[in-house]
Image 1 (spheres, rainbow, N blue to C red):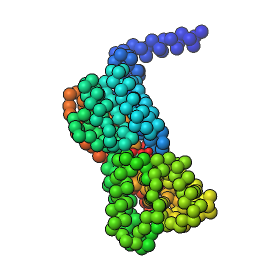
Image 2: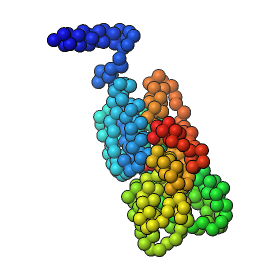
Image 3: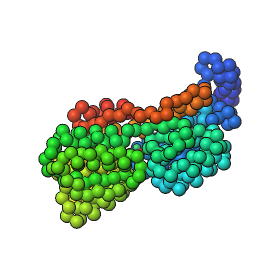
Length: 325
Ligand code: GYE
């Protein structure tokens, strides 16, 4: 009984304190009607990168921070994203955040969002659109630079020595695929010792990465290096190599993108040789953009996030655990 009274007293005190915003005030979810409503059309859940990105958005745009986030997973299909955006417009959301699957064919639906007066913030990949007034701003990675970073490392490591390359591509038509592929193509053009022995899309998934490399090994194709446009395809490729009795990192070198924590551990154990970082933590960045817009300010139209790259030298458990993904 005593305990009940004490708890009630404490609760009452808490209410008084938080209502006055006094010391010890706890942050409580705001009234539902005061929340800023954000519709987020997400590509899917195809990779570690994507899951870290979704979590970052959910954490930053939480009710505690004053937001209601409506998340739509498009399962890597643009048609589903277009439907999701139309639903957001019908629901009258305050902002739309779009992580686009591919670059093209957004004109009509973004025109509809504009007509409804809803600002659209693009994250991660870019869109190719004639009227750039149809979106408010974009924030994401410089994917071509990522590809160039990988090629620079390959050049420093192998020079123009004969190198048989297997290229696992991401979703065809996505900026991440286009930039990373363009980087490799430039590398191939500049090194006549490098030979592209296989190129196909593994859709950024582990299962497809494994399938492609398994099929290749069954055909008896030899190769020295796998250029995998994301970590999850690299995990699948590594499984395929091991199943065939090959040693990833020794018999076949792996170059990958994203630098998620599993991949960085694979650098430490020698399976992945080089990984270019792609930063998925866009949640706080989007929140900062919305805050600017709410104050009537104009955020920069395009913002590239800073990124680095990793190899075994200089990498440690401490570095990996200090990262957010
Ligand atoms: O590299 C991949 C994900 O667009 C940056 O998409 C993103 C890419 C990322 O599925 O893992």
